[in-house]
Length: 447
Image 1 (cartoon, one colour):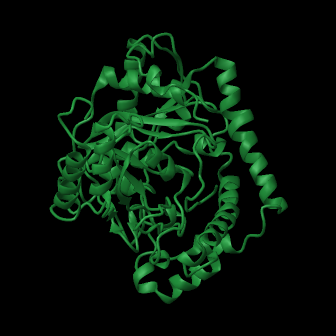
Image 2 (cartoon, rainbow, N blue to C red):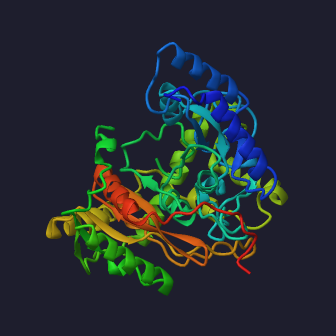
């Protein structure tokens, strides 16, 4: 576009045609839950601004898809995938969407997601929502795209937009990015505003572009958390090959260098999520005013029960019910669980490990290979490593690492607070050495 050989309107039209060809028909990926009917008009406006010499920044005129739990004050819905929130659009943009607009991005549409960000049932199916149906894996269609940012992962992997925005509490960016063969960054909690986002729980100063150096691994100290591997032999083999790449690029690899508290916070994390889901969701619904018919989690439980055929054909809502039974965020059960989570994941976990070994990052396999989507039994994870960074509120980056039987695997770089630029540099350098990513071909099945 800067050279004048491509317009934003032409690029937006091309992506809309791509969505029609492979998302709404053909492989029928069901990654995009709604297309913005104003996208071409907005793109034309960005072109006019460019011609007038007003370029807002690198995102000027770039089509972006955002997850359907980010409010946008336009003609599109924000529903978290639930039929219960279908009705009027949100009254105001989420901070993320507002910043995208200010930067000149073209909001192309909303992506499907695991309904309510995968926090309705322990037997949920990632990528399924009552409103959007089942998002499919872009490489092998009967496999699962993981979640909860399932639509964003599939959409960007399938080249339905230039940029995709997801959200994560624990794994919702890292897992679909890894499983769909993408780079995915889960930032430090607080770095990006969560205002106007349908929650599970509720400073951008680094020059990230300067961190993208092909030699960024040279001299870096990388810890290998072996207690975050070992869940799949093919994944372990690919992981060991990735470690050889890090060594070959000049990194000092400390192996093993285990995060000592992995898994010790699991029960407390679940308690925190139950409390924060109820509190955050009730606050969000109240902020929507008369644009939604349901104002509390209790209302949503009643709606799902009354509309079980549409909302609960495969799995129930026991997590909703458990969360609804919790009290206020002043409860001792909550405050003590939150304190233990922070101590175990930060003070006695990542912070202690990084200090002891003077680390730049910890690495581990992001996930196992994708599983066959199973609406009867739910998700069948073979392993993953999003939790320690998620519980700590620290950044995590996944980059393509390898393929197993045509299914992508990711390598996670985990850091301490506000180390996004460093992680992006390390991940970029790894990618320059490997360049393993292949475009998806929409195979029906492995058989």
